[in-house]
Length: 100
Image (cartoon, rainbow, N blue to C red):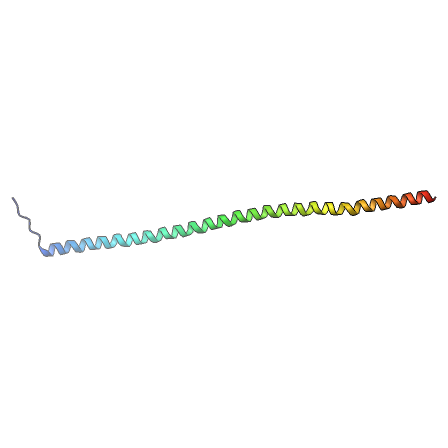
C-alpha cells in the first residue's frame, strides 16, 4: 500500500485555488443577478407602456362615442327650430292666402 502525503502547503495552495474559483463564480452570479434585474425592470416598463397604450385606445373609443352622442344631440336640437320655422312660414303663407 502506498502512503500519500499532503503537505500543509499543498492544502493551502488548493484552498487558494478553490477560493479563486468560488470568488469568480460569485462575481459571475452577481453579474447574472444584475442582468436579470435589468431584464425585469425593462419588462415592467414594457408592461406599463402596453397598459398605457390600451388605456389610450379605450379613451379614443370613448371620445369617438361621446362625439357621436354630441352630434346626435345637435341634430335633435336643430330639428326643433327647423320645424318651428317651417310651421311659422306655413302660418304666414296661410294668413296671406286667406287675406287675399
